[in-house]
Every structure is written in C-alpha cells, then in structure tokens.
Image (cartoon, rainbow, N blue to C red):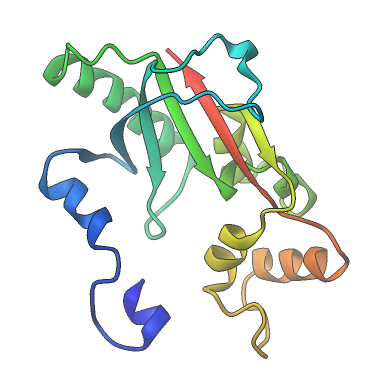
Length: 178
C-alpha cells in the first residue's frame, strides 16, 4: 500500500504491523482477526443483543489475495476454533467488521452472485454509513478516482458510473454472533 500511495517502498502503517508482532492480530486463512470489545453508539442498531464491553473478534479483509465466499467461511470457522483453543479466557460473542465490503450500497453495482455481496450477507448490519465513500473509493480505485484515467475492471467501471450519477457506495458496521 505504501508504494502505491507514495511511489516508493516504505512503511506507513506501523500501528497496523505492530498488531501482528505483538500477537494481537492473527491471519487465519483469508481473513485477519484481533481482539476488541463492542462499544455501543447511538447510531448502532443494538437489537442484535450486544452490549458495551462484549468481547468480539474484529475482522480485517486484506486488500490482496483471492476473495471467495468459501475461503471467508473457512477462515471464520478457523478463527472460532483458534481463539477458543488458544485464548479460552477471551469468551467472544462473535465477529465485528467495519468495511466498505459490507455496505448495502454495493448491491447497486454488483450482482447477487458476487463474492463481496455474499461476504456482506454473512453479517447483520448494525450501522450503515450511506454517504461514507472514502474507503470504497480508495480500495476500488487505488486512491485515484479523482485523477484522469480509465477504469480497468468491471467493478471500477460500474462503481465510477454509479458514483458519477450521485450514488453512494458507503460503508457499514456488521456483526456475526456465535
């Protein structure tokens, strides 16, 4: 990411890397996980039964690599087994993820058969940030949406058209209870 953003090798996300070194974050299959606690917010739909302080596993989707629904499902199962075996004192209630990949707005540019849509449907959305497009734009267009250049992928073409017409891809916070 640093090279794409700045044009040279480097490390711009030191805090993120330290999570792996300090055994706070683990890559299990396709996804990464770290310890977290649920924090209630007035913008959250808390009808899912979570309360402040409930232990959760935060899910991170790496930008690179094959992304299929099956690989994500396998990873979630691996995480359940791993954390229950090696961290039994961390009695987690489920998974939580804050990502553009969970945004319901993606259904406007992707088919139901898309792995991104399938991944998002695994989660119960508790906060939908409809107009928060920055992460989607950064990930889909590699931070170059405003620059001249022709979209290359079908997702870029569809997303750019949708955004240019005033649509929002958004961002969402979702949970999977276990």
